[in-house]
Length: 258
Image (cartoon, rainbow, N blue to C red):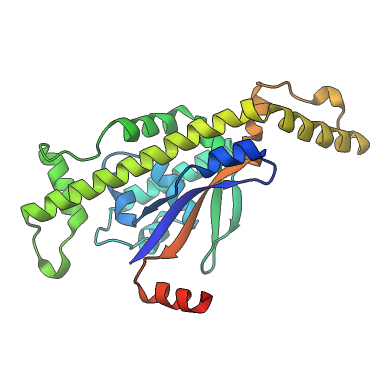
C-alpha cells in the first residue's frame, strides 16, 4: 500500500532562524483511508488540501476513481465537495499549480495563508482538541465499520473496530499537530522576517519602477492585507507520494539508491 507524506516546503527566501523553526514540523505519513475518515466526520478544507496537493482532477468522478487507496469508496457527493471547494479557494488564494510528482497531471501547492481562513482554523482546532472517533458513540462505530470495509466478505470483529478507532484517532492527532504547528510557525515568519520581507519588496518595487509600472510609494505597509499575502513566497503545503517501507517499490528504490 502506498504511503503519502504531508510536509512544509520552505522557500530559499526564509531567514535561517525561520527555516530552523519550520524544519521542526514533522511530516505526517498517512493512507487515504485516514483522509476519508476526516470526510466522514464532516471535515472539508483539510481533505481538500490533501487531495489536491497530490493530484488535480478534471471532475468529481475522477477524484473518486483515482484515490482508491483504501477498502472504502465514498459516495460521489464527497468528491463533488472537494472539486467545488478547490475552485472556490483558487479564486481567493494564489495557488501554485505544478506538475505531479509521479505520473501525468498537475497538483496544487497551497500557500500557507490558507491556514488563516476561519473555516480552516476551525477544522485545525477541532482536530487538535478532539478525538475523531469515540468507542462510546454508535455513529462513530459505524464510521469505523465503513473504514474497515469487507475484505473477502469478512465482517469486522470488536477488536477490528477498536483497532480502527485507535488508528484513526492517532492519525487525526498527527494531522491536527501538523496543521497547528504550521499555522503557529508561519504566523511567526512575519514577525521574525519582517525586515527580510520588506527588503525583498523594496527590491521588487525598484524593479517595477524601472519598468514604469509602480513606485516605492506603492509598497504596502507591514501588517496590511497585501503584505500578509506574501507568506506564499516563504512556505507552502506540499504532498509527497512515497512507497510504504517493505513494499516492492520501496525495495527497488532502496536498491537503486545504494
